[in-house]
Structures are given as structure tokens and as C-alpha cells.
Length: 356
Image 1 (cartoon, rainbow, N blue to C red):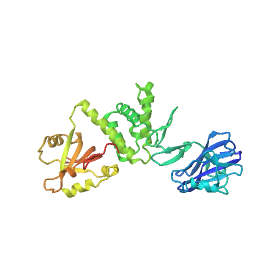
Image 2: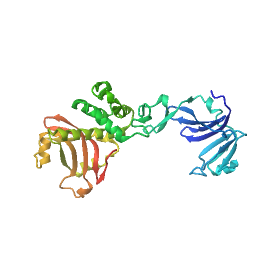
Image 3: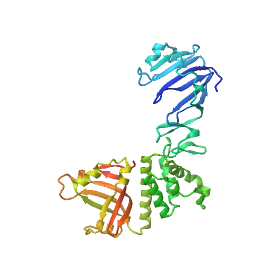
Image 4: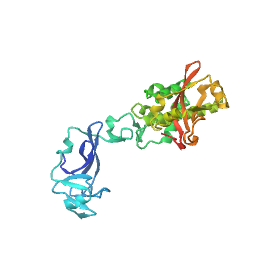
């Protein structure tokens, strides 16, 4: 419990009403964060100043004179702006409402309060106390909360490079299982190798931390991060296929009636779940007319991209209807048919979608 006298309480608007955001007690300043999902008011000391007990300087909100903050001050504290004393009426013009009494008593006595640092999660769009951090944000020793798909300061390039180092240590079966888990929204930790399994690389284990943390962070709801990860793994597999040159990868072009093609064009490229749940059924008894057709019929599992195109009877411009999709998986449903599941929309009506 805080024993110093509370001199200033500044409140900010949240989804749950007005909550403390900054408090001066004694000669110290404390930052407060309302964590909406955790229903916790977290606070920590942010600094010490010799004049905080007598003077409280105000800035100007960009949205002023809209009400942006509420402020309570002890009678001994003087409000200032640009070094000059100001009145409560003048403070209102800067976006502040001066209160006669605190809104809910001493904020350090709040039943939902806890002394703890907080970290913002991009996926949750909320602050979390570090003692209750969500899975989306992972900690790196000596650097802080900078790993995982929810970290505000995540380095995507370093994360992808670290993930690729891990993927090179996986067997094709493990790699495919990992991609399937990420694609389907299943827990991904079952599909990754434990760090201890990298017996020859343990002395460089720090190189794997960003990739491991990224995979661990996908256990919470994060559809766009999962879609990006599927794209990374797909690109890694595609590069591996090229390097091995066992069976050349190929593209499959499918002509569809305009009505059927319209159902694909209506898909949201930023919602990967629609692509995963809607496979394209291809009957394998068609007569090949191009090299692409021949390669597809020979080995449909090696198909890496599909172009959906209107058939010849369409009166609409083909240039406005083409849809190119990456292939996440090809599953045989019978000896004469396969289902193609898509990973991401690569090109849609001439608009390129690189990373969701």
C-alpha cells in the first residue's frame, strides 16, 4: 500500500470508464495502465522529480478543446502551462477537466490494482501485466518483451530468419505437420522440435529464440499472424523444392464458369479461414491441353500455385477476373479427384497481396 500522500491523479478514458493514467505521490510519479481483458489496474514508479509536489505542468491535447483527460490536484499543487500558472477554466481549453474530488478514492487502494509493469499486445489490442502476459508476446532475456506475433517491437526479418533455421532442422514430415497445424488453427507446439533436439546447434541456441517464440505465440487467436506464418513456411518449402530439383514445381490453370469464379472473387484476402475451409475439387480425368495440365496430372501434390480464370464463354474482361492463389495442401479424395486447399491470395484483380 502506498504511504506517501497522493497529490495529483490524472484520468484517461477507457472502455470501462475513466481510469487513472498518471499519479503523483510525494515526489514520485507513477504510471497507471488499465488492462481491459485482465480487469487489472497496474501501476509502477516511472520517475522522481523535485518539483512534482508543488507544480503540475500541462501540455495541450491535439483534440482539445474536446474532453481528453480528467485531473484532480491537491490544494498545494499549482497548475502551469508553458511555465505560467493557469486556472481550471484555462485548463479546460487544453483538453482537461479539473475535478473537485478523486473519482474513486486513492488509486493505490483500488481492489483491482497491482504493482506491476505492463506490456501492450498487438493481437489483443490491450495492455497486460507482465506477470499475466498472454501467449502472443514472449520475453527475450536481456532485451524485454520483443518476441512473438503480439510484440509491438518484433523484428519480422530476424523472426523469419530464425524460423527458417528451425525449419532446416525438421524432416519433411515434421515440416508439413507444422504447416498444417498453423494453417488449421491447431496448437503449433506439437509440430515444432524441442530446442534440446538440435544437438549440433545448441551452442548457437539464441539464434532459434525468435522463431521458437513466434511459433509459441501462435497458440492464441491470431488469424493474420497464422496466415503470414503459413506463407513463410510455404516459401521455405518452395525454395527447398527448387534446391532439391527432384520434381519440378508447377502452376495449374483452371477455367471456371463466371458464376463459380465469382464465389472465389468474393473471398476476403485477409481472412485465411475462408481459403482453408473452401477447397477446389479437381477431377483428374480431364484431357491435358498444356504443359501445366500435363505436369499437374503427373504429380498434383507438387502444384504450388493455381490461377482461376473465366472460361471461354465469359463476356467479362479476363484481366479483371483472374485470381492467383498459393497452394497450402493437395489432398487426394479418390483415385480420380483431388482437393486443393489454398494458403493465400497472391494476385487478385491486379492487386497484389504480399503478406497478410
